[in-house]
Length: 494
Image 1 (spheres, one colour):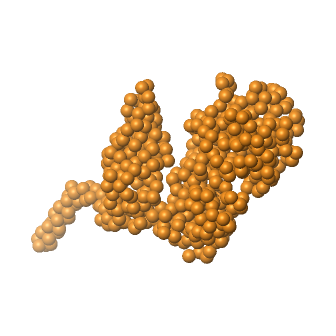
Image 2 (cartoon, rainbow, N blue to C red):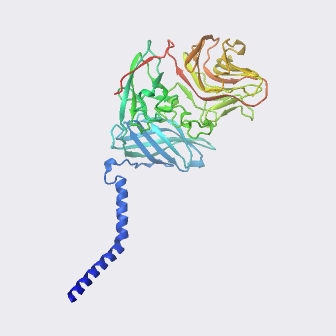
Image 3 (cartoon, rainbow, N blue to C red):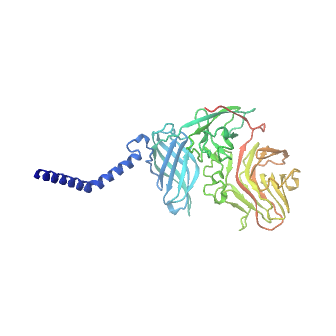
């Protein structure tokens, strides 16, 4: 009996000691286990699977993340307080001073100008800089150039730092070769229209078309801009910026459907696309991936609320008949108003395209609004015009002045009030008119060379209120000498 008691007593003491040990050290062990799980999930114990950002410097900016893949290098930055209590800075250039692990050269790269305010985040994309393999560490020493306004004037300065990380997996899954053929050599640069029926490729295209880019066979990315299309079940229109050619081959590349290769440099889309059905004036994502200025000879999306550089108006009223707010509107004016690009430097043959709509039944009894080409010294113009003699409105072709309007008229049914693409092909001595890229009228005569863009609201009969025209974007592009867009042959998916 004594033996049993002593044995039970020893077991009880051992159990008590174990319990006391667990009570003393259990929380510490639990914390260690939790930390180990977190570190494992972050890939600390498997560095090859971890994609990290270790960037430093660039005050007053902070690099919050970078992504480097075959599609390019994008850098997200957060702005701290700016010098001289400036409320906004504009980033315009980056100088690469040394490079490891990317295709970057030691040189300066011009960027799509990016505005950023204190406390806000912006993303810059460095053109032609990419990582060709996954899970490779890269590092770029660089200077970011930015400017800001002070009471003494505009200041341009640089900030220095290092962009580093591990390249991500973003391989091209499929590609389609396109053979483009022209009967005569195209100008250089040349904006090629590419129309794609995405129903043929919806197994590879992501639902919002964000995983598609265009390249040459050597892998060089071709600047491309998607004008329309928001799903892989639609027919989509792209514009590619190519050099001179009679025959050339390009690839339409598909990344994984979870990839987003859109940016504001070489692979972009029209400014209104990210807004969906949201009015563009209230859409914070307007022009999120718009790279139109890198595709066309001239391009403007009228982003923001101020007149773009180079644009002038004779609107001196406090009413502001011309208003920029992610696109622009022109309201009725009793004395007429002009809004035009002040640099006359476009040589023919050249095409002007603009997307917008004429407002049905504008708030005036009579008057006209014209959008097109202009000669400021001779006050001569040619364009698409809306004429109203209340209650009827027409859209017609106009040249010289309203009394020389063409005899072909469109009434408001089916055209006025709808978003359309209006084009004017300026050949120097005559003008072609296209609606949604379909020819409507050829060879309106011109008395003077028309080398700039004008939006004009002619004086008319009141009342003095109401929008007459809404414009989202416009571009100017080269036009083939024979007036025919080069043909495209689509190859097999590879």
